[in-house]
Structure formats: structure tokens, C-alpha cells
Amino acid sequence: MKNSEDTALLHLRKAGLDFAAAKALSVNASIADEVVGFHIQQSIEKGLKAILAANKVDFRKTHDIRELMDLAQKQSIPIPDQFRYLDEWNPFGVELRYDDIPVGIPPIDRNAAIAITGQFVEWVQLKLSKKQ
Image (tube, rainbow, N blue to C red; front, side, top):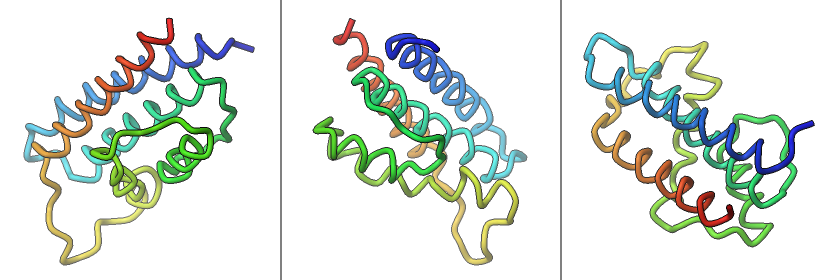
């Protein structure tokens, strides 16, 4: 089994890969919001797992951003207030991979989504660099 530092770095790398995919896909209007949203959700999820692993916190296999954020809070790992609503991306992790976005839901603001996800990934990178 990998140690927590290796696991944290792996999750951070994977978060960066999903963020790069989301960024590249977000500029193409023919790519569905579900696809862009999935990579945003995955980037956030893996970033949270990186933070937890770096702090030697065990977590179950889950796609639930809220669960991971709550676990961080219970372990006294502060997550900046600007990221408190990242769990709004939860539906893109599972439900919207297999279902359509409900009628009447506005399109995602891709620029805003990329901006906040980029800030989050940068924050995770900074936190992990301070741990080393």
C-alpha cells in the first residue's frame, strides 16, 4: 500500500489532469455541460482526497464532495470559505453521467466553473507543498 504522501501526490496529479480536461473541453460549445461538469467534479473530488491523504485521514471510496468536505472539517482541516459550495458539482460525478440534465436548468457558467476549480486546485497544491 502506498504511503499517505504518495497517495496525496497521486490524487493531486489526477486532480490536475481532470482540471486540464475540463479547461480544454469547456471552450468547445459542442461538448455537453455534463462532460465538462464531470471533469470539474472529478478535479474537486481528487483535490479533497489529496488534502485528506496528506493529513493522514482515511476516507472511503466515494464521489461525494460534501462527504469529503465534512470529513475534512471533522478532522480540523480548514477549507477556505470561497470553496464552501463546491459540493454543487456532486450531481456531475454520478447522476448526470447516466441521466440528462433536467429541463429548465440553465447551462453551467463554464468560465466561472473553470476559475473556481483552478483556484481550488492551486490551493491544494499550495497546502501539499507546505506539508513536504
